[in-house]
Image (cartoon, rainbow, N blue to C red; front, side, top):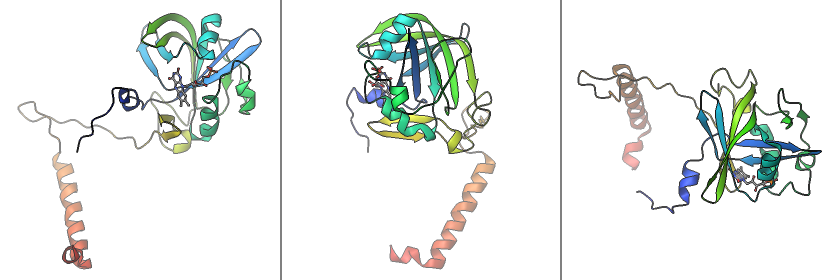
Length: 222
Ligand SMILES: Cc1cc2nc3c(=O)[nH]c(=O)nc-3n(C[C@H](O)[C@H](O)[C@H](O)COP(=O)(O)O)c2cc1C
């Protein structure tokens, strides 16, 4: 059955990217907020976008300082990540309240969060009003990642070193179960959805399941 959804469900259906904790700094103050709406925008120059509501303190901090950093947490920082999204940093030092350890970025002022899996430092390239949000376009000036987590792509070898994704409300998931897409086409150029090897594996699996059901007498019960 297909379920009819609300127009606003589009945002959650498109939500599977890693959650970013955006850190900012302006004069003596620092701030951090989780942002789910992020996007790579350009390779050369390297640009990324963060879509942020103009009421957020983070939006003001980026406008004033013209810099921001993206910190990508794993499941170890689940509680801290959510906590940072529950209040404004206007009157509270959320980074301190969350007990997060920080370290200096390579090329920008906003602090980076210890315990994250990867970090992207950005200078502000552009600010674009989009509907009720604002897209802050960052020019990437520095990138670091944990060796256990990333080597040209997310490794996803263990949940501890895999990024968190935001589902909505208080729900998150750990990105995982990597798969290799092996594409084969037939003589007419149509996709072969099951290779000979995959068909053999499936038939063997089905035969094993049939044997098990017969041995257990499960078919008769149903
Ligand atoms: C997991 C998560 C993802 C969020 N994603 C966004 C987002 O993409 N854009 C946005 O404007 N707010 C987003 N929010 C809300 C802000 O993080 C929240 O309003 C935060 O308190 C803002 O803090 P600030 O006022 O200190 O910037 C998200 C919240 C959570 C918990």
